[in-house]
Length: 401
Image (cartoon, rainbow, N blue to C red; front, side, top):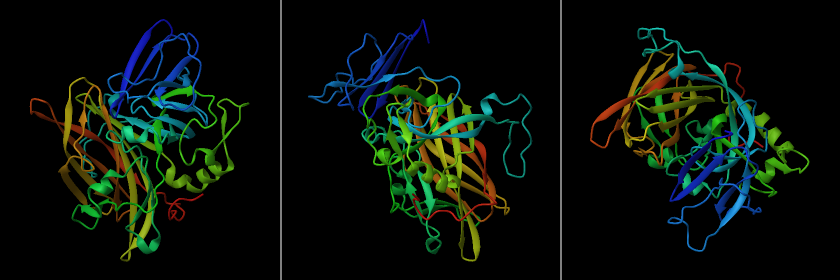
């Protein structure tokens, strides 16, 4: 960004995080009220701070790190500290995932196909490799983003003797669980959307982050991220860059839970400046009432790319199962909420679950949004596959260390 200046403010709860990038002119401090660690001031305009009208009384700005130039090529290593460019939280990279991104906004100009057996029209979309990261979120930032993001809920199936229960490691909170405990959407036995009960196992602060959402920074603090797993997973080593290296605990945890953590496909589509991104995850299979039930979780991010304010009012899902069933599900909002997307708070993210009595299927649909003048418009949810792992091992019954 040499020779230019850019400024972007991120609303986090009642707080404004601001950053200003003015060329590559040396250190660019990252500041926060009551932040972790302090650094000498630098001659630069790049700072992370609270606006004066929202700053808690008695709080002063403390530098927590120094911005680095984001990587255009290559990937970030384990231990990289970052600021999330959309949700504004501080985090640290645990390890990368190589996913296939199916972006329908850049699909070929081939004409749309007729509705296929899965029940939806589709464009010819070719996937491209894209890097995502498994990350830890700083616990100090979680309360300030809970209105805009659950972050990602990493969910495990329960033991076989309780095949309907789910164990979660939510990024912040499983709002869908709280909104409707043990409630079901759908009427046919072939397709069931489960709003799971509040999980008995909860480790807050895990998320999946796209490469372009990473704003890297450095810190001299040996524990710059407050998370109960930070020191369990990472070891400070000042001779390394970044100076946080993976402990054996992290490597073992990744290896044991790899099938249930792995991110493989990402689907994206934009309608009237509302971009919808879907990431499905296969969770495993359980036996219930003499039949096999296959489980998936999916994370959805909604982004308003325009300056006009819109509000999500309804969802409309269609779910096709390989067993031959086609289910339609309608409802108000998502996870018990009707989020507003504005210039100040342009994104909302949530996750949910679906089960089929077949090893594969498809999901697609629309979200209905409302404009300030009362008019409505539908935003397409890109179709995505629900695929099981034929060579799967027994899914974990909770968190494996």
